[in-house]
Image 1 (tube, rainbow, N blue to C red):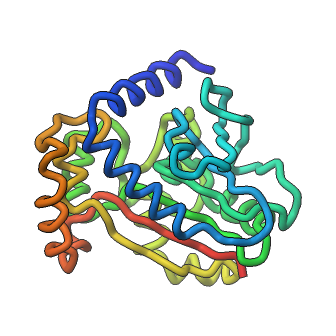
Image 2: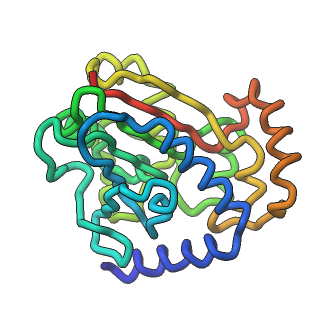
Length: 244
């Protein structure tokens, strides 16, 4: 495991332990993922598992990462999946899709390994007008809405922590028709814009926390009222694809 990845995961663990509002939000998102899992034969594989937080909500998930870490069950490259055709029930990617250098290669591989009715469940940054500004000024990861959507991004290929946070927005929102033409057997069953208020106020894993966990309930109510403005305000998206 590279020193850079070790340092990043240890930083995330410290933030997870110190920020109860962040833990609560991610657990809510993990529960959303759990509730959308395909109920077909096969394993549930999390790609890019980080420090393994999903295991608390989905105990039978197989945790993987592109490098061996203290939390992974097995090393797996998302663009070269080591599974038999039609053998996987679910592929889960939490804050991982934007780290893929070649998302087309991943989608081809996912189509191959998923059982009929199997699902890809993606939680990733969403680039609304508000979040794009925040990502560009206050987040270290690259956010390029003019970048390559489907093909290889050489900047992202530079290492496991490199990314373009706009990838999911480009593929599943701005260029959805192209996605559907290219992978007609990966049916889009759900697209949701999330995290309008609570997540940015939580500070995430690295930003300045602006709200305590005690404010979760009133802020969650305000966020529900703001949902019609999700296209303008959202910081995250949730996408579910199903293998036909």
